[in-house]
Image (cartoon, rainbow, N blue to C red; front, side):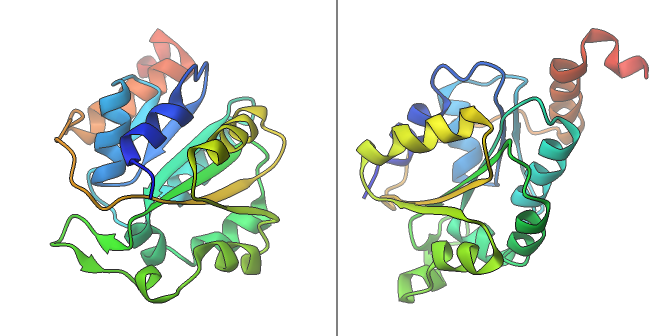
Length: 193
């Protein structure tokens, strides 16, 4: 099992203009631990929505790579989004599911992935051609390269350790997070539009 903070650090290193949407809980804390930046949109609510928010951002910003980092519980909740994402297939969108096989935010109950549900197979079944499983750090670099290349939709499930990590909380105000990302993308006058 991979360490989720090391995984986040590896995929976000030397990120350039990559935009990152993080699902609620651990993914949001992990991207913040790597470095709080306006290019991050950590979610505080809306479980199940990270992948669709990433899709919208990728469609709105086709010249920028967009990475969604989410958890297995959130991806299971929003599993229907894979069909829409596959049909739209923005070449600049990558989705990384941190799969610890537990609902980390509600007490550690087992998710369906703990009992054999295969998110990679589900993504492939939805029509995402490049769907892969990451079980070693050696497999992270090719995923990171694909995410930055903007050469096609990529979906990956990384099996991670369920260990708790120290909380590194992003700003809590959703309007602030949205406004700072908007300004990072469109420039300082974006708030006047």
